[in-house]
Image 1: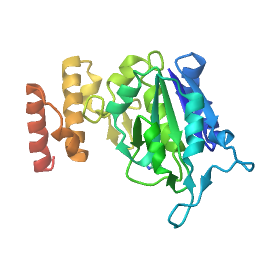
Image 2: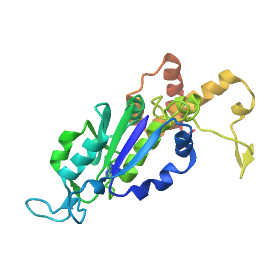
Image 3: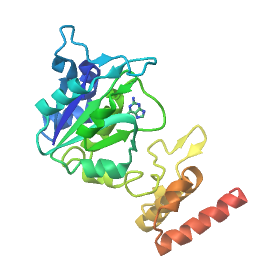
Image 4: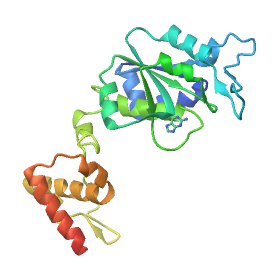
Length: 243
Ligand code: 6GU
């Protein structure tokens, strides 16, 4: 996959592409990340990329001609172009899975107070990573990149993301490693016996418990199997008893 990032602050991506799983994915040829400085597409002598808002008001607005030239010079007919903005659709794992199937995506990062509204007509999608305001789309684009790259073949083992919270619709079950006892807290007995039927049941039940307690909104959208229905009933009874 090719990921092109349009930004006014290319140095913000240096750390991101040079560490851990992202670096390894690039080195292995799983993906290619191209960070493109939008400022080079300003025709202005001083390389201005923004201007004051028409109609007045505070702050600066990213100009449409600069962004449009940068898009035209770097996107092909197959490039899925995404504007990173707090006004976009809330980003979810389902969108990450959709993007991971594409050959080439482009993430366009704004900065300052906003984009000229007409920029919206040049893109295929708008994404927000949550209900809070960042100073620019750079960190948000890294969130999207990271979540997509780890889904690509050979980035990590398939099993590592097939168990993910959200991709299965439930939060992940609790995990433990040695020591078996730490500061008076013991690893649940069932995980130490090697009975895989009981271990799987424990994990399913605790995933349901965590989701029930923390994210009932996810549970409302989840199709429970007969076994899960029974386990959730037990969870609800236990929680109501304060167990
Ligand atoms: Cl994509 N951009 C900015 N500036 N703020 C955000 C965002 C994006 N998503 C959430 N907040």
